Length: 217
Image 1 (cartoon, helix red, strand yellow):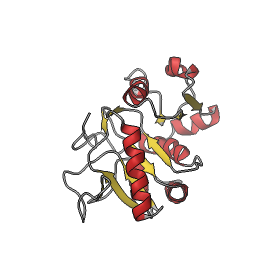
Image 2: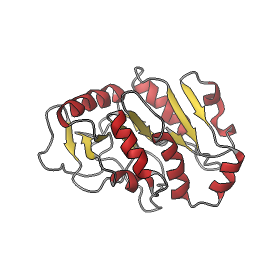
Image 3: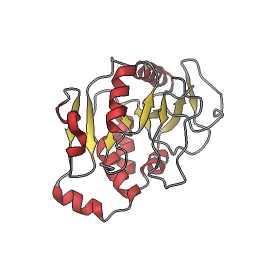
Image 4: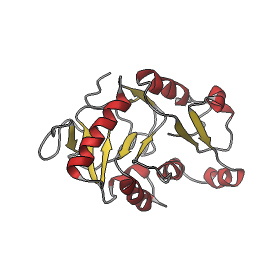
């Protein structure tokens, strides 16, 4: 998960992480990438055994201060997607509401997608379109994204190969969502949204905030 201090605005990360584990206790410990030097806003998350924090140095923070919001977000999300994994990686933003059993569902669908479509694919748990791509919903509960991918709120790189290709493609690019969508991966979503965006801003701009389509709590 990637986060940044929004003080004095609302810091969503506390509620998001609490909801993440409440809705699916099988979710494993996470790594939280903090895109600002000040970490006091994390409060009890700093000592939560489920959360490993990767901070930002003072020098990095000075560089970030000069960046527009979408570049700061891209820098932090790129750090998250660059973390090696054994069986893929889930990238989450910090202003989400989760469906019950969201992690189990995402992993189950991801395994089917891997088996049927191969390793070079991304599975989004957040639908932004009111229709599906060619072929509709496939057995196993996934469907092609019917247009440009532009919402990285809950994105599963279904294999380590997919993560590596995505990380190489997004490096140095912003906005992160659009760069990830242009990567050489197949773009799929779950048949219904398993996360909802609750934030009041977007790294794509002030008018880019939208809610998930067909979110089922």
